Image 1 (cartoon, rainbow, N blue to C red):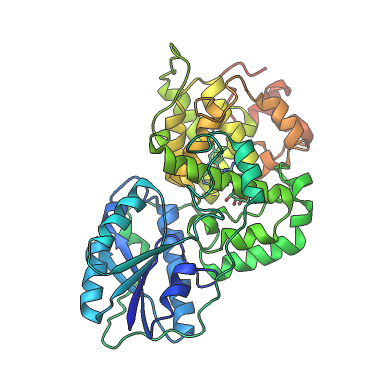
Image 2: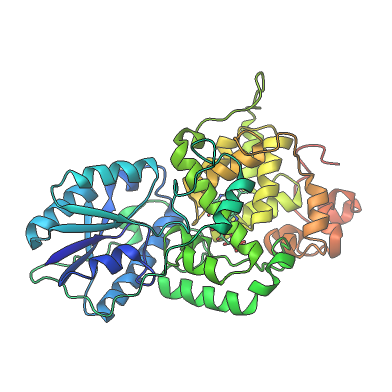
Length: 429
Ligand code: FAD
């Protein structure tokens, strides 16, 4: 028998239930289709396309080590899967279940191909919809979800395939170059993609930093969080493996990820709509928005975060909170502008996590405290007390020592003129 496993955002051979199930067949066609609908849309940011290409090269190498290969196609994934089934005589197709609106539609269309299609868990620790409150259909707030999540029984880890045999006569196809897929350029200092790199980071982090997570995860300069979000986004590491190995506070963050995915699956409109109080108006200030995007607001802690995003395609969670609060609460600008900019640059950019977090900060979602505002200067002195995070990313301020770097406007005029750093665009004190 022959089966197809269609990779999507599960680019790993370890703990991949869809791949493990497909490998019960005699011959397996591991396939990835560059989806034109995604490549032509707003989700194909250069930073993510680059990470995707590196992850696919790594996946191909792992599959070759097992005796197989990665079969690469471009076009509509459903049509290409149908064509592969026709060419190889495959009667079954295995895919990782993805509950975004797009993933759900794709699964429905695959089921119309006339071959047996089975969808397997793997994007989250607990699949969206698996946990429901005693009264009601879906969890809307996090704390009760977290309690249920933490008490739930998780699936066992799927075993990695020992060997993969391709059917004869399948042309693997070559991986495209970044320039074939996008005209934009990627950030200069990103993390490399792939399962091997993800596992290396996971193992090192669990050994060296995990025990310290609860204490250090908000320390901007120490940079002690796992930085595994890009690998989770593309499935290079298994969220379940991480949840089983990580400390309590860390598991809670993975539960936040699952929570956002189940909210997005239940209420897809949350990514575009909000529930802000009646009469609330956003501020259409193009100049302020541009200054925020470019990291030239004159508020060092905000600019450091925005510049980290551009340089690395990543931003520390505490900086995401500070910059998002500054945009929506201090500048009064619509969170959807922030969401779009984050989506353009984040390697881990994911509609469920991005929208869920923006709504939470802006106070517009269904799980939020509408009154919370983060004072950037107070945040700076709590989470970057020595100023090292700012100096790392804001070159103009690199010569200012200690916490004074957070208030360059209080320095003697001579010290300020020496740098090209702008004054704050709003009265922040
Ligand atoms: P760690 O602290 O090591 O946490 C481990 C994992 O838990 C992360 O890799 C991530 O998968 C998950 N996680 C942690 N915090 C959150 C959270 N608040 N919500 C959801 N998952 C979480 N995360 C994304 O993966 N994609 C996004 O597009 C995204 N957009 C965000 C936008 C805003 C405005 C904010 C405030 C946060 C956003 N986050 C997003 C959540 C969080 O900032 C990142 O997941 C985290 O910074 C990644 O770094 P890490 O892997 O070192 O995290």
